[in-house]
Figure 1 (tube, rainbow, N blue to C red):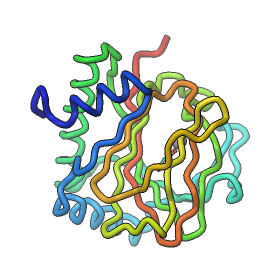
Figure 2: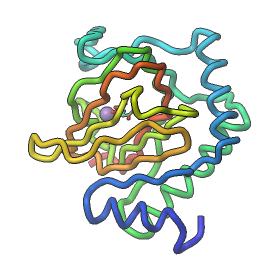
Figure 3: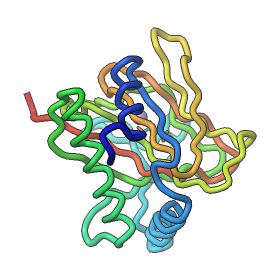
Length: 201
Ligand code: OGA
Ligand code: MN
């Protein structure tokens, strides 16, 4: 990742406004390859209905969260490995420029069927205080704005950004306190979503 390249702008935006959007983080070809991995894992039954609550109180509430997730675990496909390597560069760049002390990452695919959404929330549930920087990398080729599915970011109860889940686009935001939601889409909405984490305090 070049020093003054696109990631520099992404990081500057995160620093100034708490979030940033980088289009074409993945090339069209890479999106095709990674989406194929996601679809393959889906066909193999590796996606599970996402639940809400802590380990003790877990429940499926489709009215709150309707997606299906698949944690990225070994063995990985080559396209997944390559994407992880790119995200590793992003982690290092954030550390270099913002001194975030990001140590590692947790990542899952998230697939929202048509009509599914994820109501307003923050990404630091009980036991996940180490999450510092949230990201979503979208895997939806030929996304049409009319399909919906925006990531909506809030600040003090006011919507400040609606971000379309266009293929290859990377969104990053500082996890702490950032309320956000996923609006329902008319098509399947696939993303690779994750969190860069800092050391436990
Ligand atoms: C999440 C989430 C945002 C998105 O998985 O916690 O908020 O745009 N995802 O997919
Ligand atoms: Mn979230």
